[in-house]
Length: 161
Image 1 (cartoon, helix red, strand yellow):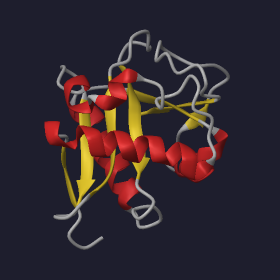
Image 2 (cartoon, helix red, strand yellow):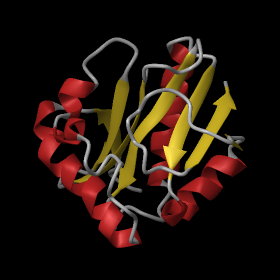
Image 3 (cartoon, helix red, strand yellow):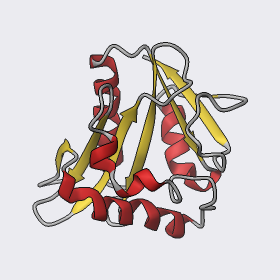
């Protein structure tokens, strides 16, 4: 993790982050229909996270982008909740603790913005991440919250801050 910087997303990150996100679906054999893979906002993350109450953190070395994770005030969530979104790492970044750093920074941001809980959606193919969420106190839900539009996700979790 030497030389890894966690910083806010920049406009010049858009294409590289979209590639990292979409590559993860192929790497894990995850279905793409009804997921962030098809979501047009994946191609303009800088624009998506420019709004109030949203933050996207990027892990990078001086040479390359490694991944991202953020929080976004998805419509329809319970009062005081925000969604953990766009949490994906490049193949070279996985298993190095970088994901934990990005998620921790996102949860810190949620608390700093006075959210009282966080919600996320995932897929069984991302079982390593789901296990990390469970270890961090996220609880599985019976149904989705909010209106993310990602109808292909089958795991829904939430955590009080």
